Image (cartoon, rainbow, N blue to C red; front, side, top):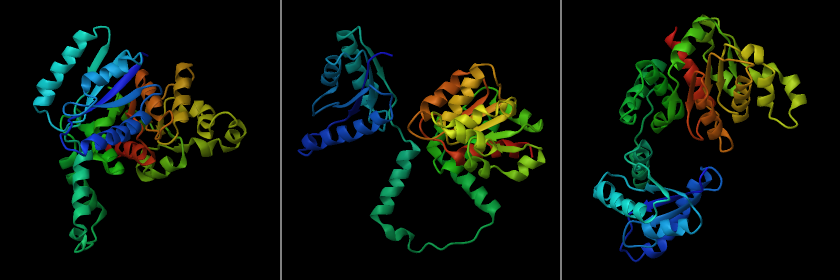
Length: 341
């Protein structure tokens, strides 16, 4: 991979507090972003105007550190003149000055639901009394579900390109996570839903990495289709305890379930090592699952294991990045089970 640097580009300010405030902001954002990127990437900040370093100065600083590829991230909300005219002009000037360097500009932050929720939080903090008159009104489970889906419909990001069946699954994942913005991170292979439904109709087992995922699966709907639920760690507990000196219990458990995994649905909501092990077994020709719901969560190997999953010619549903978890994984398989019920 090319030596890579990232520039977080803010607007800048004439205010006297910007002199001290901007460096602190740059450092806080840069450290947070760097922790979520592959090792070795340099992250720094720049101001479009009024403050230093400006964009060209920041590029020069990175080039002096032998950076070959630079990604510019506009820390802006709107597609205003700075985004459509000013920044492209500066970037073209820099490209002409350093033709051997690769410069890329990311999209703006935009009106993501992360920001919408932050606006609501700011209002809550400003006037906590808004909720003092709140009265709990018992509602039926069906009414709660209907109301939740109405809210989710309003909060889903624009521009999503899911099929009708995929959108049903997306909404269930959003409901389980409480985060509408996660919809933009959900990925389906072209045949994922079809293969999953076919496996359910064929009463294929559902293999989970941990108990939390298994506990979240709707036993009634699984039972209707004759789909057994197997928690890998529980099913091979005695064996995995003897094999976990160098690998995790979840990884060892997957290795011990190759016969069960073949042609079945694998649901991983916790352990990246379990997903990595399943991919290794696929690469070795030992197994071919009907569908992998790959949603391990965390900061070590979770993001990477999911990107590896998407490289394989295997049906999958996943959430890119570090997010995931047992609730989202269980919600995904439950959505599929419900479609066939």
